[in-house]
Image (cartoon, rainbow, N blue to C red; front, side):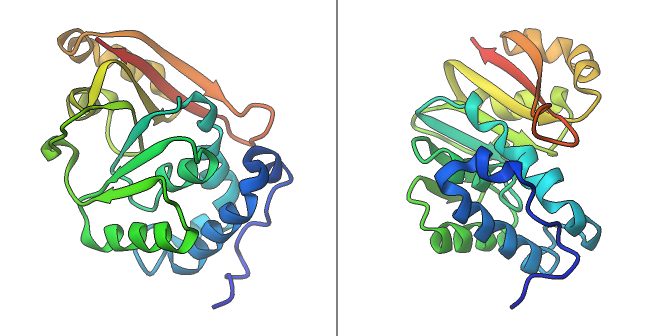
Length: 211
């Protein structure tokens, strides 16, 4: 099935950001453009900014990840989980998603892209039970920081990190989450702005250490 005509042309920065993994990124982007609306993953208005607003918005987070294990909460379309797994084959990802249709999409993408560093788990973040915690946890467009903390912090090993993609109000979300920050003993809570040299709209991340 051909990619819809309105799909954004690949930006010149994509090859630099993905390096030798760019072909996998192209395949995933084409699949998302072709089937994303069918699976309820993206709306038709997202196609003209699919690369810049979604794919590249996620990949600039890749340098923040350490070799180890990462849990991606509410993976949905695979943003950022699949994108980061493509960019960082040295990191093991667990994509956590409760909706059956989205879990099927994620599993199909893992198989199609040949990602041997990804496991998909159908569950809600608050119901996940782990033998060992993750080194880091990511999430994008899931919930406010104050609500994400009790969902994500228990999944992280002591000394691990939350790396949560947020919008323009990230700093205000930190202020609003003061009680949860204290309750879950987070430290080094900060807002990082990424991609200024590559993106038309910067990516904001709340990063915090879990005690």
